[in-house]
Image 1 (cartoon, rainbow, N blue to C red):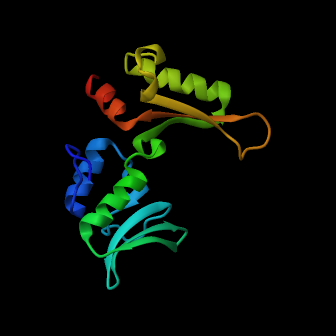
Image 2 (cartoon, rainbow, N blue to C red):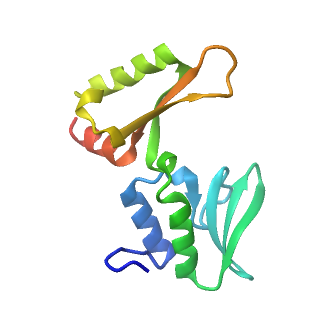
Length: 152
């Protein structure tokens, strides 16, 4: 392990750490969520500490670990540093102009603008699965949203 870097060794510690990072709690489950969907799950099972992906009731096992700490490190690596897991949807999906306006309105209501934010504080993408004009989504880093909302 890297010296000086924190690695949660239990599910309880991992949950606290992921919350501090701003990871969207819908992106993971630590075995206490009855029916997660489109999430990475860490669960203790007879075969060991299992990390799996679940979607629409189907499980895809990603790894099985003998130790809880190893399973925690695995889940952290899968969700703790994924850009979309660290962000919250603010505007869209909507036609680009509408999404642009909705994002700018949300920021203005919080007393800020895009220019006031660091580039890593927000992102957008144009969803490819909608026919016709591109539909856009805007996301903001969860820790940035917490900071902005605390300043209200």
